[in-house]
Length: 315
Length: 265
Image 1 (spheres, rainbow over the protein chains, first blue to last red):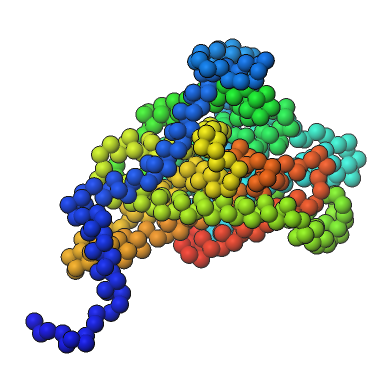
Image 2 (spheres, each protein chain N blue to C red; image 1 turned 30 degrees about the vertical axis):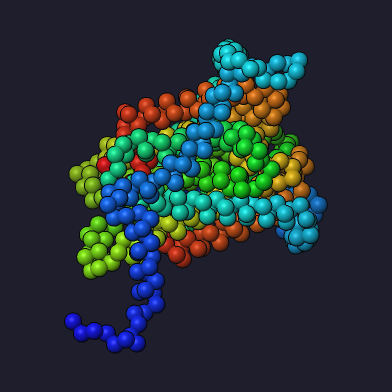
């Protein structure tokens, strides 16, 4: 091997990279290489640890009762708050309202999201696909408050719809602050989530299967029922699950479009913390909601697998 | 081959979705341009007076700045953490993978109100409430699954032989990571990073719980300012969010292409 002349220098970025490699060898020696995966995942585990700490704090607070004369939390633990939360008819009404709205929203959202996702996957013209994608992403990226504000302008007592109706002589109606308005707002809010979770499942279905079923004489409702829906099941489960849990626990839409009369569980929890200042009862409610949500997600995972929610590719 | 009845059914449902999705945005845009003092229909002429008004409002400017800071912190924290986690889950053999996945899905399965209140109690205990970085950290925690998904779905597409080939040609570990692994997952990192920024910018409930009157972010300020009478200045503020959303979509399309969301898993 010929010796390089003494004035020969390797390019700067080579030497820089060599230095970096040497530092890496020093900090994380090669024999630790098989643990590199743990090194990579550690920050995420720590970050989510904040959330676990939070859940522990909630659990602790939920076991302390509020002394209404001093407004201090009790020193010793009791299950009083849970008893209160589970026996109160107010919370039962609120829980029932959230649950029924979540079911209704999930069904309506999937009915709207399925054809949208199908059109996105199957449409031939690139510009239509792009237009559909932009229409989907714009509200997704705008946020709940602004969207709800838009609905306030449209549906309010002196909003666009009522003003337009009064022009043709119809007396103004109360379109907002009822159950229907909340569900409608939620469907609009959840639609992009549902479509984005359905799309991978529909992409995985080759168009030929539909063509084959059609050429064998199946009408399109039969193709939909016997071919598309069964094959898209993982996506439907993933999307349905996400929509259901997000709806069940939503705060902004019931608060803004429900006008205080259509509170969901999250609003009841918020009120316990910031109106009644009973942290204990609020924490108990929050923990019940967390438990209910986790059990639900766990059950669906166990029965149907993680569907489109699995992280990482290894199966 | 679509039959006529199928065409009608599919496209009428799709059009209904398109209208429902776009209507609030269009109405907010329209309302912000009104010349009247109230949002009315039919509109009372065009003007930019509300933009002039919000441009001079100090509380709005500061809330906007705070939202930007929160979104910036969230992105700076979540992008490296989420990228490494996404790579670890898809490119390394870890033990207890299922347990880790369930654990990392916690921010997603725990309802926002639960995460928000839990973090509020933790940060309260640490006496750090009242500054902005806890809000940014909280946004990073609750949105972490989105960037992990986004990165790991890019990472599974990378052929592991490419990394071996690079090392065979003499590349060190850092060099392989920087020149082979990272570029391969870049679409996922960019998508995830944009998502982090946008979601934190719009985050409402967790901001509501973690901020007080001195450090409200813009979505919380809008929520607090909504009264029964609807005035167009809030519509003009909302247009700021619409503009940011449009910019993010444009960037996403430019850098990775919106079609990235259409591929199968």
